[in-house]
Length: 299
Image (cartoon, rainbow, N blue to C red; front, side, top):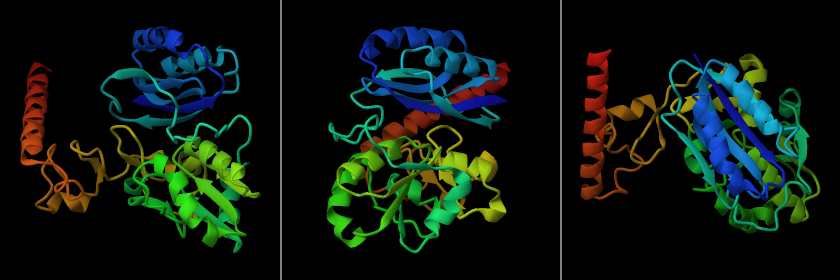
């Protein structure tokens, strides 16, 4: 059984570049895989390890950094390894919005715990906005939530500029997978002059963990950025697979579509890639299947 940890924390990290190699070595020595992103504004990532001890050691290590004492993480489990390798990357932002003046350390929306979320989003004067990408929203969201239809988080400010007038006078409730995108989107809306902005504390993952399914307003599954692809209530693994060509989720029924070819294309991306791309993807898939066959024989 693998322990999966989703974590982020906003705090000044001026020496991010200096910490990168040491953090990689720390994780590698403990068998931790996944991705961690470091930037001047903090850390973000999802990692996993066999058992729980290595993850607890990582969290304790990160909380030892100046300003990171309050770092929180969300735990779930996976039967098989959710990640194939370890990556520790340096970026300009730990979640890319492209708005340099947005400062989650200065102001953010009011955090609402999962137990209070249903009452908030059911209020008639509240508009609920899903801040995730379009392919994430497609497989699940809260009933009645507004889907901005954005292909990346960087597009959200433009969507808001085009739609803010029709949402004027409403209280705004926002949510995302684990909470980090809402730290920036709610900070952005506050800077835009929206007075009452709320944020699902811990994101969808915490909601699915804590709110009983019979009381839930969530519909569908929640996309996650690892080999589980999606989770449902209780954070159990969902029914979707991953298209290796475009990294989008593939519903069980979509596999019957002629456009679906394992490792090569899915109905969402079949028209987006060239025949040359598809040939390259097919060769990659062939090599993966050969490696699996060799591993099975040696095991």
